[in-house]
Amino acid sequence: MIMPFTVHTYNENGKEVQVPTIQLGVGDVFMGSVTNASTGMAGVAFIVDKPGEIGREHPDHKGRTVSELGAVFQVLSDNRESLEVLLEAVQIAISDFDEMQSKNSDSENSESQHD
Figure 1: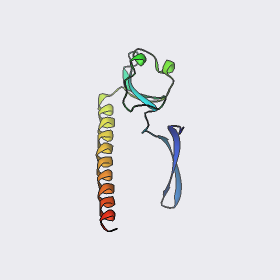
Figure 2 (figure 1 turned 90 degrees about the vertical axis):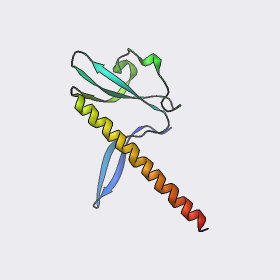
Figure 3 (figure 1 turned 60 degrees about the horizontal axis):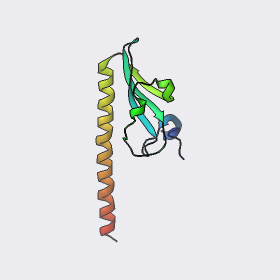
Figure 4 (figure 1 turned 45 degrees about the horizontal axis):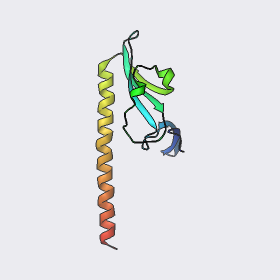
């Protein structure tokens, strides 16, 4: 099993850079909304789960604390605008992903026509 929390290594201008990464794709990371009334913060917690259907419901998680659920990472803010920026970044990433998939599909179709 691939651990969803890892370090990806990139080469940027001849320099090796390591970036902590949450790898998604097999349904083994539960992402759920979290709130803390005493701090006025809200956000998203990331919890390692068993691989399964991506986006599946976790009704047993409702009302439990992040420590009870074993959260390993969370994004919190006391500013709604910050969460909107996070959402916008994810929406752009989805658009970029779709564009990349489309280009890959076009390239594969072009290669198969020349075989």
